[in-house]
Image 1 (cartoon, rainbow, N blue to C red):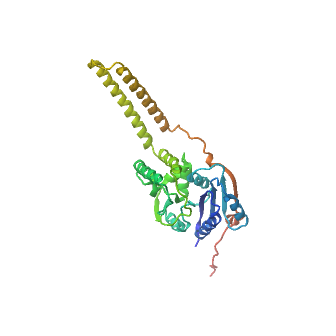
Image 2: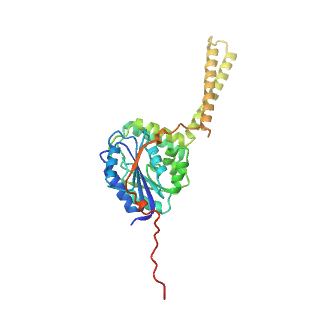
Image 3: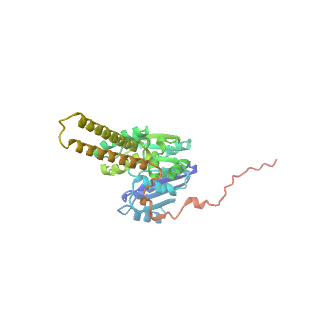
Length: 332
């Protein structure tokens, strides 16, 4: 039976013309069984095929209600595309579904947990998409660094398939970097969270490549923790200190020994002095990067080039209609 709440499902897609109509139908059917009021927000991440055109045709036939489509002007990452949907969702709960890897059949279990009082429920598909060997090795290194920085495992605690309460949604959207905070919200925040594991074959068998994950991993690390930059500043301090010690050693050799090679003292002091100055400059730059005054460039990935929706929105059919329960006749 449908629950008395509003459910939003955010579905980032990219170049999925072969399965997009079936996928939207499956998601809409699952949402209709779970909630009385629901919406499906499809965010097209700059597809290069006929995905958008197929969605237009499919929705124009009134095949499925409550679907909104936002086509981005510039290609971006999955999390940034999901944030575009979160900014436009109206639901009490929002589910973010990765069409490439996640399975809609797990949605009722996630909704059941979030209705039990959890602000965040994360589901992890144990049967992941194929990845190249360098990608897997880099992923192991990233998981280790992430665990050291945050005390939590990225794969388990920051999986992409998740349901968020309205409180968690507002927290994500108010963050300086919402796309990063979306993955990070359950790691070190105080929101009550739960985790589910399931196993299902990915919808797409596309291979994950190393170049696709390097930028995302670096941004995730430096945007959610000061630990990497603090390591950099510590190395700068160590380099500056080491060069000072080396300069003292060179002066001591010049004063205490007579058989010093000509020019060795000058070249050594020159090199140690230059590296000392470089270390100091890098230290200052790192501290400025840690300052809250630093600002990021505009996020062009959130620019919507086109939007359209289903002709029929069921929640509008109940707008301004008051439902009054029938009362029995109490006259004696």
